[in-house]
Image 1 (cartoon, helix red, strand yellow):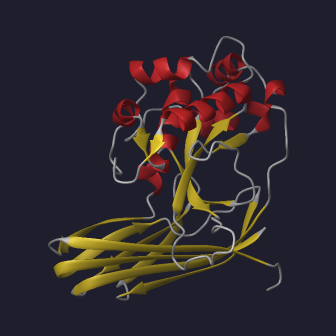
Image 2 (image 1 turned 90 degrees about the vertical axis):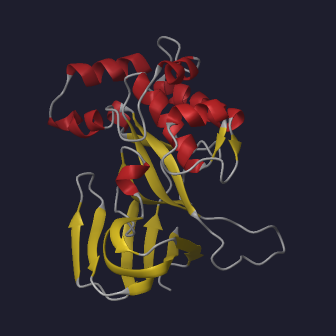
Amino acid sequence: MNFEISHRTIYRYSAPVAQSHHLLHLQPRTHPRQKVLDYSLFIDPLPASKTDLIDDFGNPTTIVAIEQDHTMLTFHSQARADVEAPADFDPAHSPGWNDVAAQLRANLGPETFEAVVYTCPSRFIRPSREVHKFARASFPEGRPLLEAVTDLTSRIHQSFAYQSGSTDAATPVEEALRLKKGVCQDFAHVGIACLRTMGLPARYVSGYLLTRPPEGMPKLVGADASHAWFSVWAAELGWVDFDPTNNLRPKEEHVALAFGRDYHDVSPVSGVLLGGGEHEVEVSVDVNPVEPGQ
């Protein structure tokens, strides 16, 4: 399925910003099921410098420096991507989760290096006794890995309430677990923490999800939003995605933006600035399917 994606972020400051530096993850990444066909980035005011690179996790990344006074800053990315659904499989026929964890410990060569990175604690995800207790119910000894992760995904979906404003970008996993509420970022963090505490590699996926309006209603411009889910490493099966917010396995309607250990690694826009006072942020996202060739 082909998508056109528009992601606009506007910062408004109560006092002039004299200088700012920003790290951007706004270009969708290419992976085996996703091809990026086109991408452009508009920045106002124009940056004094702009550097495009690939970060340590393989994500397209942009670093910009704004060196003129400004009270408003706009980043507007536009992309087109082609996404394929993953092949169907029976979770019960996946390898046992214990075997996958043991295989990773026993084979720390180049072919498993990427997976090992995603077993370590990260800024927002530190496995704990409480996390392990929640996770353990889905992971009896010898259970097929993807069957266990499917169960974990369902339990997160059923146990947590989606409530905007109940958490923020820095909310620890333990707090989200205690509150039993949050947003997609929190649910992905909880799933990743559970998997890592069982010795399994799990990565955070930021991206977009095609939303559909109620029947008979028009789709509102700018009403879509960024989304987050997680992937688990399943040895020979590779990385497999799960979306606990919607209790499903992502297919062609999930567009991946970046992979990281947690949200901190893949925040769409981050940075430091000199001046500015208080600020407001306005984010507008549109994800629309298009016919190939249009």
